[in-house]
Length: 571
Image (cartoon, rainbow, N blue to C red; front, side):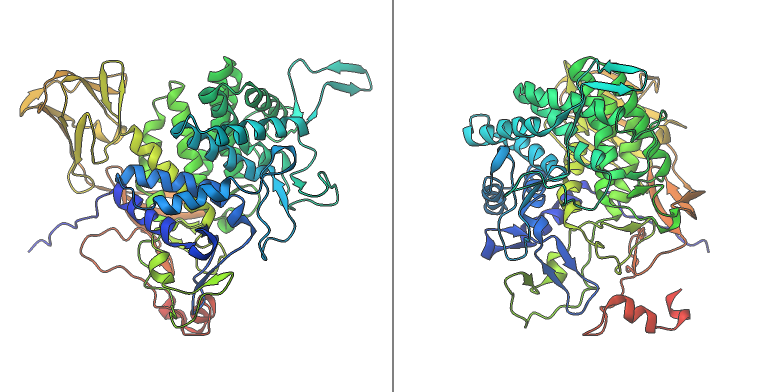
């Protein structure tokens, strides 16, 4: 007798958002006005979360955006008190030159402002002011910050060569350092030590352009133009093909900012350069969304994926889509439903917990196995999340990944003029229509109009072969124009259905210096081999128990526990 065909789990964006909401609202410190915990130590028994300086620097900004995103996706007010706490932190500790400095906690050490972190602050203030346009305090802080940063740059005006002096035709702005001290300003003896000052400072490019687009902040636009010109020219960070050596998170965020800057200025060269950089990052990434943390820094096999990089790639793709490059819809779809989903922790049973231990000033032990659900990895392999890596679950990624979910959620269905377009095969019940899909098990997608109007459905490459279209059960032409099936005018209650064959297809792909066999079913990866440990990814077969490691013995780390096991048990 033929065995029944395997069934696979269906992608659920709302489930990802619910888990993220759990993490964002529980992995906080109620004794410190909901201050986030960045450092999550899950490879020890007992596990714990601990405060560090970045909690009150980058995280209160990015987590405020992330929590707003999950609340909007889920349509809930749950979390509003935590969000208010993040925002109270964000409005504290402003100082010289209009910069935001982290607050003086026992774990904070030297008080300074990092320009890398100001990117998150500008972005968070942009979102907040968009939601509350009459909030004078938020406006004052945003405009004060862009002006303060503009006042601190070195403006490069002249090239002085052996053959003479040559003025720069466009503004070129460079920050003298990557940190600015609360007491003392520029201190050349102090640096973050991360290197790549130019690109890490340049992360603010996209938020600066948004500040101009949304609120007319011309100083922000000027700072963005000068920063972009420095990055693309004098810094020598990118070569003529958009390739670089270093931090992918920063460079990919910059790429999206360049494309957006092109729209704001009318300078198409920025868009062309942004596309080069994004395409280079995609060339280093997997087809299913694994994006390396660094380019050409480590041997490829030693590279891991910081989830922030997936978010930046998705944002960059959306900027390219806005610039008229519809081919990036397919990338967005593959990345969000595969590696972005897999990099999220969905089960905390592998964590050793001791709830008898009281919380301390800078550390919490309580229910870490439950609170960690919804977090994202800061160092995943294509097939696993390593628990030896100190960022196996990273607070920075929990602040960015929900923003990617939100942007995808906003664009599943869009309305431009009179036309409603369904862009992505992801289930949603929205204001214009309801989208239902059978993927990955069955090859169909159904759109039910909730309002009369002109409708179109984007057809992605995996849907095109053998496509069959019906409207209210009657066969229609499957002709695709400009990437979309033009359904014409529909009445409320009309149903468009697209169907096509789907079957398992296994392809070989080299990712991070290793060869993998990737089994696709439509646009979903349903199996990846070789399998990874200890947190194995792509266990997508429905009804089969997940292979989750047991917690390490009390008093040990995961690495120690694994090394004590026989080699045969590790395979």
